[in-house]
Length: 426
Image (cartoon, rainbow, N blue to C red; front, side, top):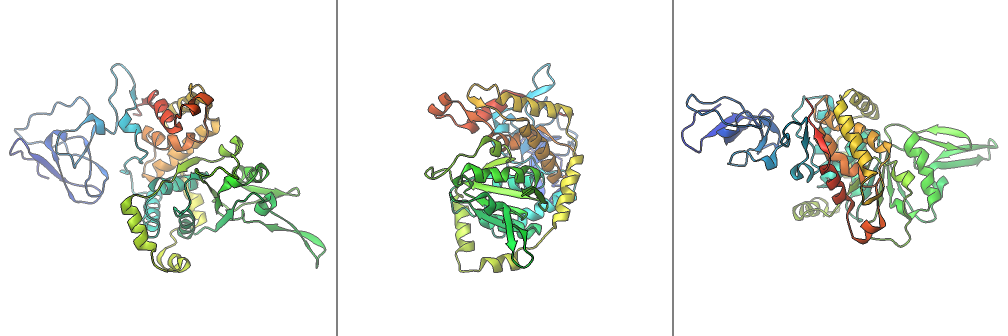
């Protein structure tokens, strides 16, 4: 490690703990955290200094700086906002709430973290971009939740679920929801056996592990109702007989935000069953070019999934990791913070209806999974901020005045988050 200053623009050079490449940062940033420009991981900057170096005057010892920035650290990129005088809490800044990127994974090399990184790398072989969709779906799977996706057609949702099924070693199923779809078309129904003169239950397409419910809002309410028990209880009841589903079980439902003709609004009871509502948008120019280069040929998708995609785990291992996430510590201050967020949605002026206690439960389950993926045995306020919008955006309803004014739920949720003090977990 080089810590000897030679000029006013002296740099401190040290190896990254993750990729072992040399990082060069200003000497004034010693003792802080820096984001490695190579692997993008956040590492601790050594606190060593030369014999003639002045001791830096830094009233905020936990600031995070970007190693690509040649100047001293700025509060705008701080991983932890400044603590107000005389208080035990910190106020969320716009920089903290502007993005939904996960916290830096600087924890231990655990089974959950290794598997998470391997799954993302394997998915990237055939599925380009949609970072929030990939991360949100993985968090939901390992939290026992479900995902509602709002996106236009043609963004590769079916490809993603099929790829995920192959990687996780899970069964994949798809239901195309239409106006004439009946509940028995989803759950299955008794079929009369002429040979035995008895009714035998024939399982429907819901008896799988990764279920893609395509354009779910094209079916009427009675068909939606068939999914309520399935999503919450992980079982199907037909003619008084209960048939359990194999775990893990994920419903990944999609709805088109553009078309309204021939669609039905999902009831609030069903929306509340979804852990996340994720927004999938068009890819960037570079991502779309990569998609064209990757899938522009006449390759057989089944052959690609069979030959190029590796199965990394089993349903049993997924269930085991899901169970171990319950050991992740959630500080009581963090529980209070989550409770304040959920309860604030019920009193926010622009919200006609707020989130239910199930939203708070989804918060706890989600931040435990995020911490497990990061190799940590504790959750942080950053974990809460990361999943706040996906958890709340489908559980709140705008007032008529807010809808007329064209206000957006995500913008209002950001204002709500900024109004609540973030606890400093010690």
